Amino acid sequence: MPTIAELNAQIAELQRQVAEQKAEGRKEAVKQIKSLMIEFDLTVDDLQVRNILSKTAKVKVPSVIKYRKGDLAWVGRGPKPEWFKADEANGVDMSQYLVG
Image (cartoon, rainbow, N blue to C red):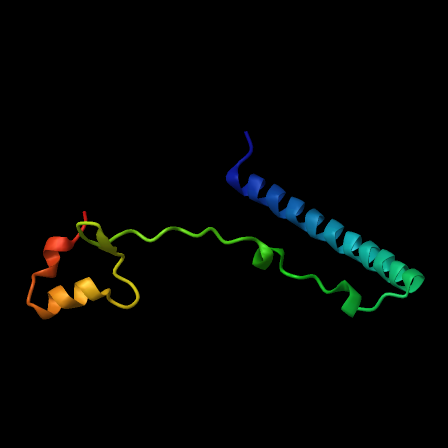
């Protein structure tokens, strides 16, 4: 069974090989890209990649009702509804309308 030091040495050697292959692959990729750019008369502006994630639809999570008075409800964000303001002005304890 190899020692930890031997395994670390193997890992380091493999990482070196990966870096070497990436560098060589990168050189070849750049060469191919330049060739295609010349062949199709492309510019760097033609290659601009847009962030795909920014175009994905964002999932909207419905707001959770925070206050309820009979059929009336408010999520606690945005302007206070009239029923809430009226009860608040009359000194009603608003904690009685808290949901959950």
